[in-house]
Length: 205
Length: 398
Image (tube, rainbow over all chains, first blue to last red):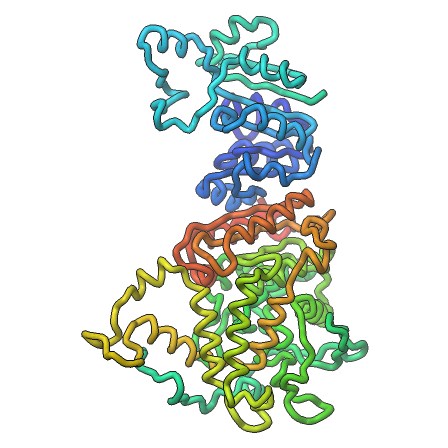
């Protein structure tokens, strides 16, 4: 990272996948940290979609182009192939229909970047195994009954879904607790065990 | 403030002749060489348009913001109103260091076509008859209002606006600007508005128009000639409309069922309740500064507004196809006059056209009128959006 602004490691991995000057839509862009970085450091033409009023207020006040809305309702209104990259960062697990979401994203963009917490991480597995309860930790801080996350998956699950949907995985990276990145393709077993988060670059065909 | 005013009498409306041109305002004559064609097919020529400005136009004339006013607003956006004596309707928003920062921007606000504060309207003298136009004045549309504003900009030598910003009917004008003159608009902020008038809104304004026309003093629209004042009808129209500008929550909080200066109800038709007294006051203070025929014309312009129909063959996205304008659409959560869903329709049309759009639904209990108040999140969004756009326009360093 030799850029002027520094962002979270997982966001940096996403940012590195994006070509300068590209048309980008960040779905669930939160306070606009990634979008702001992409606009100022990579000169992208950036748009955001965010459900929380606080997030949208912050983004627009920063001068970012962000629409307050619900991705599961509003993505259908965007024209086909309007973007070079569509980003869904840490949001897939909170959607009602993850497969439909990925399909919708691929309609809007040539390439889609999805990141999510990996439910196959060894700590999650051991928590469930030893405690017999749904895991609660730093990356998954909610109880099962108040969690916004309704569709957890493992890295392997996600790959299987992409196969079922005929979606091509162009790149896939797992991040461990220390922020170390692994290429998933070279060793899926270990990536699925050691990766706390995963970042996938997808394209249709 | 005395709320004990009887509606049907006691009009102390002595100096209130808003159409007498006896107050200072900037004014230009438009349509001098070429007449302006109206949507209804008529042409008007050599007509006055009144406006006010704030701030300074920069050397390359790139910092102009057109602020477009709502139904009962006028050009006195940020200075004292010459008739009511109240501060301008957007004085909280326009000024040095405010969201519409007059240290940075040159702000223009003009009285709409059909208005009654110096721009040509039904109260203006028709040069052919030497009498006020009355209902012989041609029907005007939001498109006509904007065409006239474009002529004003021509007069001022401004090719392109940095932004056009307006709430309610002002938001419709902002949208019309973006659709009709995309090359003359850099950014556009439609606030608490809609891309067309809903059946419910047409219905509310029809009630208002009927109240005016049912007043015997309206005299078939010739009240100025016959020296009558249809104030009762106009006040009722204002009262009916004003209800739609406030949220139920705010009404309950502000008035509830509280009684006005009395312990018990009077078993009569006095204004027993505070809300009645408040509405009567709203009605009565309105007639001092607004012409009844203007109210008919301007509400009709609202009813006829349908951006998708006029610019997109029925498809809103088509009205914005290929636009380079930067949009910031703002709605208020408790607005039921132009509810957030109407703004979402605009946003979906804009996203469908792959436009550069931001949208914020500001949480507020103040209903439609929220845009007149300096709600912190509203101010922050408007200020931030304009500054972001100013950087892109080269008016501000990053």
